[in-house]
Image 1 (tube, rainbow, N blue to C red):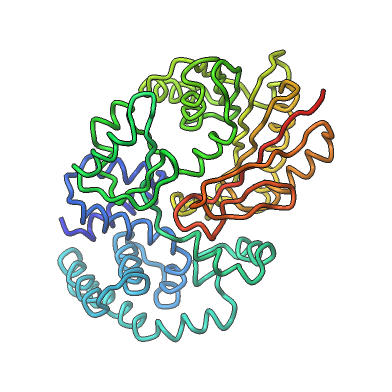
Image 2: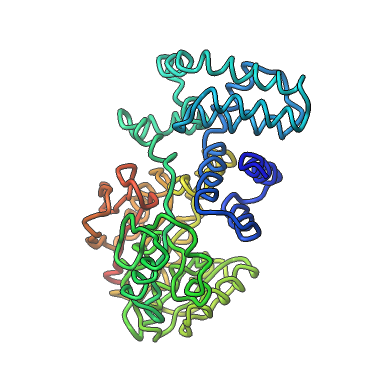
Length: 433
């Protein structure tokens, strides 16, 4: 099967509502493809999703409704290649025409050829015009409300933020030190001829997803995790023997970091509101060899009703996910500011509930994988205003992690970070009851 036909196949499945990352991983597990083929499919598949608004805009200017998804996705792939990849324009148009001719015949292939030639003729001038007319929302494929919000929060840095959120992400995995060592892992990478792009403590960014198909991954010696997620858990710094709660735990990767720091001792309560996610947490932690965690189905807002007190609490709150758009680009198209405000309220309620069950002298890390102030700085400012018995603790991050501190002492891993997910992290201490 032609490589572009494979991309069309996956895009057609994505349009049925499947999650992009799960869909692609499943496709790769069922098809024996080379590293180069997997790389091309990944780039084009995610590239089309990331740039969907721009691609649709260009198609709508040149066609009426295209009834066949196959044709529409082939055109999107071709326009994406000729705009965002180092591709030969004539070659892209020729290949699309030939693929269409084989599947639908000459008349349809002429239509495809005509659309692409029209686009290639006008492309540079149209991109220039979009920029001049301040239509960066179309150029970079963002909903208009999102672009307006970014402009308001980031001013002259807005375009840099938009570009950053569209970057192609690297695979990242963390060494499970309960079972494995960094030295053993790096030896494995050499054997597999996989290069290290960046390292943040025990989290490695690498240039191949083949690692997910190794026995080491299946045995729980390594776990898929981003450095930002890891840092949120590490900064909590739970000690061996302590009683800890992870309020929004699924799928359990941050819980695993907490357990490792506690040397698999003490007690960790891993909460989630959905029963099926509790099973996922239990399965993942069992694979990692973790035994000090109890997964519980519980709305974290009801923690204050349980009567327990904890030494440390991680509140990695449900959020809009706008800090992880590189990995989940479809999140752009299924939320709006109303959702942001709803999530902000939920986050605050979870944080407030967690604070009530923290011991005096105990510590909370509040984190989100989003970039909007409503879910980050504003929530913490409100919390500190209403809870004078809490103070902000200074946190330190590895020197190779970029970002900035906000007005209350929280750290946002922001658009200046080329590799890690955008993430907000702040640490609080309960000074008195």
